[in-house]
Structure formats: structure tokens, C-alpha cells
Image (spheres, one colour):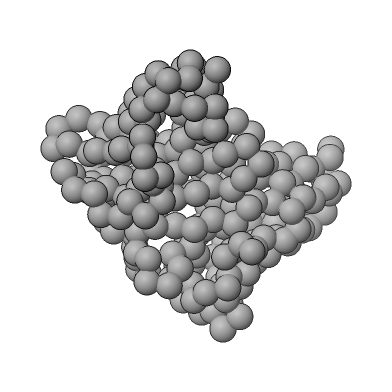
Length: 112
Length: 117
């Protein structure tokens, strides 16, 4: 089983709709990172969350970290075709400083 | 400020040849990480380096793979005697400090897509 589980694995929404992607860890989270990847390209850093209860926003994307549940959620408000891509959560797990473990990714498709 | 640079972007090798992948971190970053993304699999950590030091190579295959980050020049991921199973996207990331609970966001390069024929 994955150390970081993302759900759903894929998501298809109509433009303008809100959506949420979840990332759950089987170990203690030491920092949680969200990235976006377009097919065939590199990863774009979105946000880093460190403390339980922390919430950060950038444009229409909001990420929260619930440290007690070892879970993070990424919420997109009023989705646009430009939001389409693969969303990856990554985390430093246990005491592994430096090394990031990633979830399997969530493929987001936004229909105009 | 240029981002993380990787070259080549695409590399084709025949079985048994060597592959050399280069990574230049962002200016001011002294920590480099290599990850591999295999088809149908997630992104997996390979190795973490600082200048002239390998800090964590727990994700590196035991044979044929090596990495270095010399005092001058880019970090190099070297794969000897490539096999078809090495075909993947290899990503390099850099951070200004050691990724920890309080700092060290990792910024990724565009990747090198290795195809082994």
C-alpha cells in the first residue's frame, strides 16, 4: 500500500465547479507539499503546509493540513480549463529529512 | 532567476549504453534531489546530495546507478549499461536548505525523458 494515498485518482468536472482532492498519510507528516504537473512536463510548486490546522491559498486554490488525521486537502474554487493537470502531494515522512514521498497523483480534467 | 535546469530533455539510448543526466540547481541552492517517474507509477525518490556529498541514496538501485554533485558544475545522474526498464522520466529538484519541517521547498526541473531501445 502507498504511504501517501490520494483520492480520487481522477476527476472530471465542468468549468466553474468546485472540487477537492485529498491526501492521506500512513505516517506522521513532516511538511506537506502540493505540486501540479502537466503531462510530459515538470512539477510546479503550489504550496507547503507545516503545522496542524494550517491553511494556505493561492488564487483559487486552497490547501489545508489536518495533522491529527495525517491528511491534507486541496480545494479549487470555480475551476477553469487552466487548472487541468496532475496534482501530486508530497511529504517528508517519519524522520526522513530531505527525501519526499509522493502520492500517486490525481488527474484533473476540466471541461469548458 | 532561472529555475532548475536539466539536460538533455530527451535522451535515447540502446541497451548496454550509458546515460548521463545533468541538473543545474537554482541559483543559491546547494541541495539537489533526484526522482524517477516510471510509466504507470508515481514519483519515487532516488538520491539526495549536497556539494561533494551524498546525503541519502536509499532510493538508488544498488547497481549501475550513481550520482554526484561536484564542487563546480551540475549534478550528474549516471546510468551504466541501461536496460529497457530504465526508461522513465528523471526529475531533479533543488532547495536552498535541507528540506525539513520548517523550510526547504523543493523546486523541480522539467525532467529528462530517457528511452531505452
